[in-house]
Length: 100
Image (cartoon, rainbow, N blue to C red; front, side):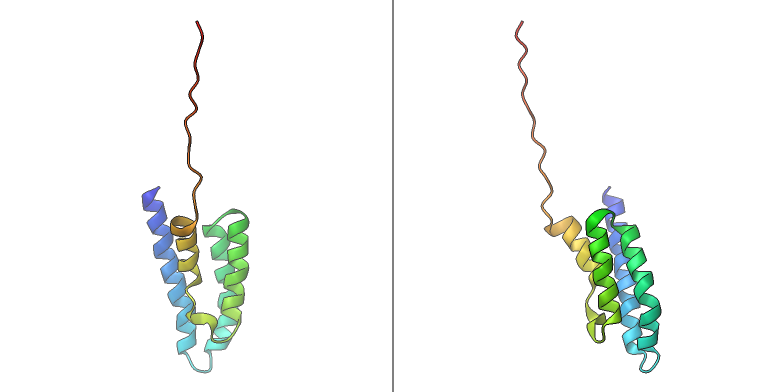
């Protein structure tokens, strides 16, 4: 599990760098964002399942389409939310007594 967790982080950082790289290309960059935005949204839903993944894919799509927002590391923030900030449910042991 730990290896998968950091594999997601590495992939997310690469995807964030790709999204930020389009900002560095003066005239073509905004057009590349039109291509990259749906790809990034699809990658986000593949990386994170369920409702949270779907919400994150909409956010990453909007972040890539809107001008000047390419600097936001959406994939990395989603990883931090999933593995650092989100409270995981704690497991509780239930004691059972058997009367003989």
